[in-house]
Length: 407
Image (spheres, rainbow, N blue to C red):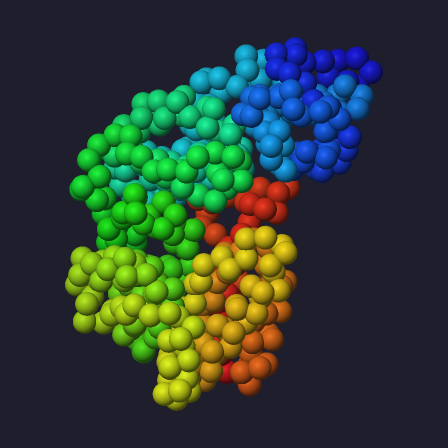
């Protein structure tokens, strides 16, 4: 180290940054307009070492010259990259992620039945998602750089966990943005025997090939558990119910609940899950457009439900459409508030990163004012603890879940 500048062996091609403030603050993304060099000479998915203007080492990551997010950092540490981004490096990162889940769920030996094992930037492996459902692993390689490391990662996951079933769900929008092909693939095992998980005493059948996302919404686990503590009886709705996660938690606690989803497949999942838990008498599911269903409910009379769960999809996938999305969220929440009895509970969520916490709260306030209702906040939470948020990267926090008393 000379003159305050760290000298690192140049084992990868180099890039230099015009601006370093955001990266030095801990962000893992580097945008194309922040790089001095022309990008056309770099192969998509190749590894690069990142330097500042004074040749100070900033980290190592992979590059995609065709993406606005041109580089995603994998390491900031000199020692970690002396031998390159190889299988040993990946083994260390994956081991750290798995050990963290054991710690988070208070088990030194065993992992939870269902858990997100790797959460992309939240585990310093940007572009990689690994979910565990019993003896099934579902993996997503979302970026060119992770796609280039795919075979090492698959070998390591098989070696470390020896799952019965391994599935690739490379069918997400982010792969298209990276210029990667979409597809789904069974890598190991027989997908005809679907995994069944146990979440806090409730059984769910998971379809890793055809289900939404990777088969289940693991990010709402802690929030579903909180609902069970608040709901002991009464009548409620679970809107955008998918496979019945919220509804079955409410029914398990003694409530009568109806789940609504526009997807016939989702309603089928939910019905089967109700049967697995002997809850068909208290949890029922209907196929309907949620907006239209709420209009019909309002026409039948207001203030009829003790609780409503509203967990819609991400209406906004870009900042340019935030106003349109906010309008849809406000309309849904407004209708729900009109249907809830005084003192009833609304559990309202948004999984849109572009709708931040402040905007989400302001939207709820606006919806309540238009509905002639008042709100008291019980809690405002985020995603489950197996989706760790990197504080230097606001993009890693996307989920907002508000539990509200509607007066």
